[in-house]
Image (cartoon, rainbow, N blue to C red; front, side):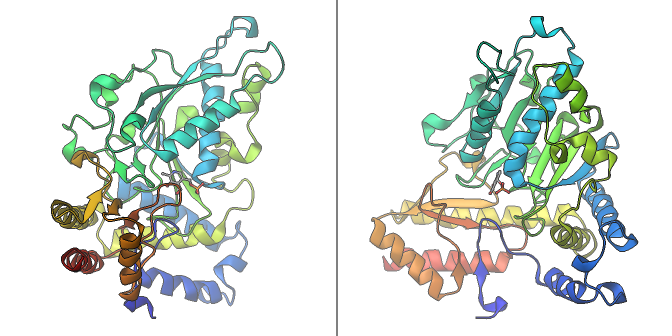
Length: 412
Ligand code: PLP
């Protein structure tokens, strides 16, 4: 089939705007009449410098990023940041609290668990802070500040379920859980009991957020309350291979100096935020292709879409339409939404199951495939159905899927 005949609901890597891909394919062959493709040009040349600087400027404008934050382009995916935030922020914490090694007590790291990805980040933190030799202290004490695991990730923790430490090296949460389809309510809904409780985090404690699967789908409320926001590109931004970081400048610390003070592990050089910042994300060869396509997507959002406001309205409309359709089909006993709490339902990843067992689910997926609805199968760890409706998925595609769900409910 052609692109036009397919509705791609992939969770990531996920669809990109066709006009962007057309421009990128031209740029891959002959970038701005240089006779060379973008990926064949030096990352230190003036052409690529303009690409990466333009991407940063457009991102700053789209998200209104405050001046005291740096924008970095890193490698290693979202998973790389599970490790990098721990290592860099332990160094920053140690430099801010320079007690002698004998008096060192491992600082807590507070994790908010709302699904698979925050749980993976927590597991990586536990792995990294192990003592390096017998009787040595651990580097830190990762702990769970709140969790909705007991609900099977079908709701978010409520305000009275959070238990933050006074002296954590940082607090960590995942804004949108891609696998489970659960997301913190946006600023427009911040009075919800499920909204992230910034006011409960003790003053001065750094907050880190994984925004991989909701980045630039809507405005980010309270960037200034975060220490670090990061996102792998491969949902709304571009191809996989680049991870964007928005980081408060005082956290760009010399981790080599910190590790010499002991009780913090050294940070691999390409993961040190200060090294990345000092070198404008060009310490070593960056992933030029995903940065290039991301730059085109950012320009497209700013120039053609006129910023995030209109996009936010469209994304809201897409999610409401799909959830309304599913709620109706659920009342008829045909499907079941995974996330039971409406305020916590993701705008980006809509998860549901088909009632009636595996055969019915197969029938749903087979019928979907025939009609051009692609990549609807849920994550292999949870099964079921997941319709990811990122920025490049149109309202028309969502309407078409809703019609299919209604027809399927009627016939089965
Ligand atoms: N965090 C979230 C919310 C994700 O959805 C993913 C991947 O889908 C990751 C982290 C891991 O990212 P990566 O595969 O780029 O390492």
